[in-house]
Length: 174
Image (cartoon, rainbow, N blue to C red; front, side, top):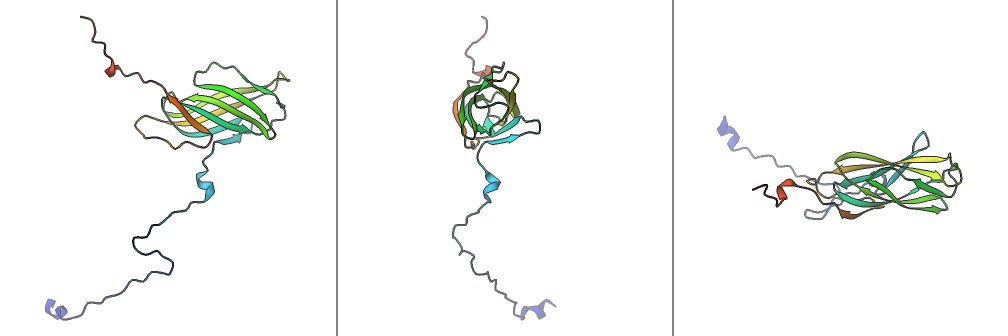
């Protein structure tokens, strides 16, 4: 039976590609919809009137300067200030009034890994009872997971020293 197939010609079929495909060795590019990789800090207003600011991926033990704009809030008015809160990881550097709301610049220290939320309170300078809470949310990577691509409005300003007991030059008591 094997001898009968020896003399038969194998069937050869050609493969044809549709017009428009690049030739072999040509470079291909993938294009994504612009909304899929929006690379700016996202500010969204919650149902209760407060704001959530998503700053993307950050690296642990690094300091960042974060700039974002808040839309106008009627109850706050034009002049607002930050209420001092006892947090070491988020510090408001400046608040500037704009035609369309306020520009906020703050300093953030990524102190531990995971999804972290730090909050600030912005209050009206003319109405004691008017304030809004702004929650800054970051996804902090540990030091072994590479360098994150920072969003527009986020700038790394430095690193914090990491304490590692194995690097100590203290040899103990004699």
